[in-house]
Amino acid sequence: QVQVVESGGGLVQAGGSLRLSCVTPVRPWYVNAMGWFRQAPGREREFVAAITWNGDQAKYADSVKGRFTISRDNAKNTVYLQMKNLKSEDTAIYYCAVDMLPGPVLRSDSYEYEYWGQGTQVTVSS
Image (cartoon, rainbow, N blue to C red):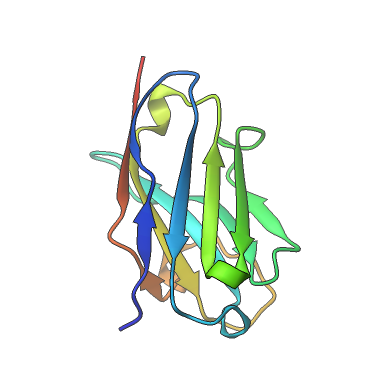
């Protein structure tokens, strides 16, 4: 089982910022892409953002475009999600996931991602 570990969640006021990190030992060249998903209470897990293994392509959900930025540092096996201008509706558990399918393709369906972290809670107070 591949370990995927998220960190950086917390409590922030609306309009504030947070940066999430995701570390996995999987070597970048074996990975098509890394993705971030989130799940709010009573709601289905939804796509947030994804980035190719070399970082040259990124994809975002419409709800976070212009506010969130996904990036990666392959030297550290780490993917980041910089979140700015946070809103109460961004409150959720955020999950990092690894897409091992052939690429380069940026996928937004959770079932296409093979490895998942345990999630990190983000709470935005209004």
